[in-house]
Length: 195
Image (cartoon, rainbow, N blue to C red):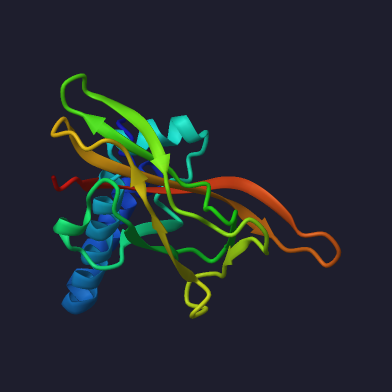
């Protein structure tokens, strides 16, 4: 006698059966469930080869997941070497994160000719003393995000096609007497350079 697999044997099958059942009872709910799953799959698919490369370099799997780095206003003309690049750093999780005053920002340019990333100077001046920057959990406005900027310093070259901006922080674990920093988290953004 052949034993047929049950949904418990295959978690994916269980999920598919749940969606089909939800859709048959309430098509609007089924559509919402399918949409949520598609969004989740798109986010997973957006973890590109570049994400894996940067994550390995930073020594953290927590890259572009809990925190997001984006341009304040997208204006491709503004992304140039030796010009400030205004950025928004947002916490998208329920945890707190702590950053140094310089956000541990590192800048790289991509060279088309040798297909390599080269680190360049960040000419931005950050305060040398003060409290670290703590991003509150998502939804705790306004302290769940902060503005920052970088100033990519390098000799302009048509060979440089992309600017990569990387920031690194740590999970902030508040304790009554002695808060401490936990695992590293990071975010990066690749921007096309305008010459």
